[in-house]
Length: 429
Image 1 (cartoon, rainbow, N blue to C red):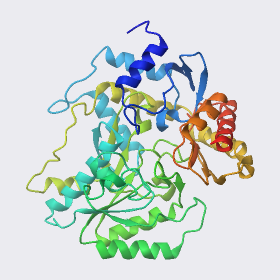
Image 2 (cartoon, helix red, strand yellow):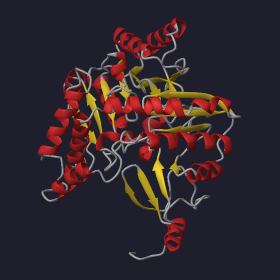
Image 3 (cartoon, rainbow, N blue to C red):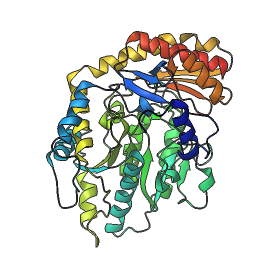
Image 4 (cartoon, rainbow, N blue to C red):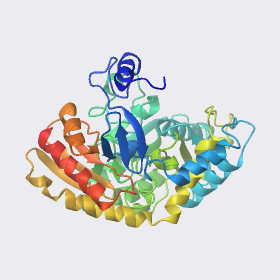
């Protein structure tokens, strides 16, 4: 297909390619990207756009990073893939050790998998099988709070927001879970005792049927881009331990520094029983995720009549993905990523300062390298895309939210451009 004109490619795309969260055929033609380097995407028409989305929050080091490119090339010269059943290899072993070292104390075992949604499936399976192995077969439900998003496969869909989320269509097909109101908003807002009491009462009331509580710590991502006080996580840890219920943290979006802590659990200083990672794990280069658990969970499973976790993705522990993940973690270790995130946070706060005067903007919030404008109406996607690209920026709003998660390597001028584009979108969409 080399040499095919852009218009011909887009015609083929419209005929054959089903894009995420879209119809077939699609309603709006996508932009054709021909190259990506640093924090910029080059389009077929020659325009360059600053990527305000880090390719759905994954490309934290930007594109074509020489260290990540070298890791990928070097590993491809030795071994691109080998099955993980009955075999192992150095990149996966080293990656598992790195993740154990980086994550909260007590998470000792690492299950590598394909995507964030699959890591949630694995985490849920771990918790269900743990209780099954201990003879507590009635503990099959999950509890979560509304406003969450955990992925698009079936068990993750069952713990996404049942009304405001994308998966209401599947009500009656999905497992029925226990939902509580979303935690009170605001990272710095005081913890509300009434909500803690409601949380504790619900977990205690359902304890005999709950396998686990699952939440996104500190930031609820695609369900609404809401922030909450880490104190609710500390309370959840105490409540679940007292009730005999496992705790899962979904850090697929928040992991690797996005909120200002390496992992959002660090804001609360607690360790869940299972922790899910993805997105930025490989710096946006390849799909890979992980579910980490405590020895308690692994030992409980091993005591059952079926002492194995019957899950094994074909590309589990892929050497290319493992190697580039190690290189991405190395980049975080070698640079002051926390200073970069603080710098981006300050630039977003400054750049979005005028948003309160824009008609239709209901709320402005920034945490770490996350900036959000919440509107009082749904976004017009076509108008939003034009407004952002006219500013030389790529954004992908959804529902009533205009948000950005810039790569950590963005310079101040890049962040200023992203903030300016967010204001332009809010004004036009």
